[in-house]
Length: 247
Image (cartoon, rainbow, N blue to C red):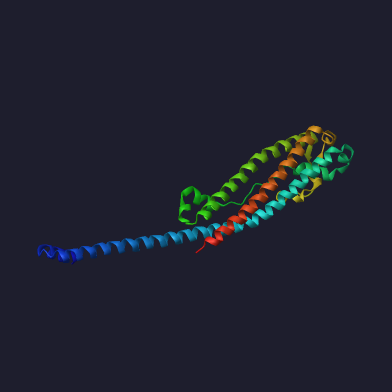
């Protein structure tokens, strides 16, 4: 309809009417583009809110899991420190018997972080981070994913030390499974000393090499617990930033 009218005005050489027709066309195209951009912007905002909502949910879940995880690793740190102190005194070390067995067997305890921030990682890796308009929130997401990777790397680093120390302690003490007692493969706090015996306890008590290994273990465990505390603080900051971004 508009095209026929423009054609008619051109044939009639009614240039004023032609100008008005073109102006109407331009305005119509401009409004159409603006409406499309607005719709796209609204869709992007909905996707951003959905993404942030999922990241908040996983961060809150991670908060709870991290609290429990820190408690477990503080207990492991205490065990590592007790073992080091026990090994230093040869006489009292041998007399500890059941307690010593538990401390030796529990050296290998070093559960990995089972929590994750998969939505945040995915947003960073896929480019969906650009959906979030706030530069500070984007920076917070980038920071927390870096912190999560750091914790994973530290666990992988320290677990090798745990394994080496565990092997040395078991070899020196002659840990043997008795087949007695209550077997609990899940709860490391429920080791039954009747399940084990130390065939050569005299070789570990006062053993300076083993004392050095367990001392190093206690130090690394303390550092790891400290890193977990820093991660917890960063996670709280991250969750606060996300909560303020929801529209």
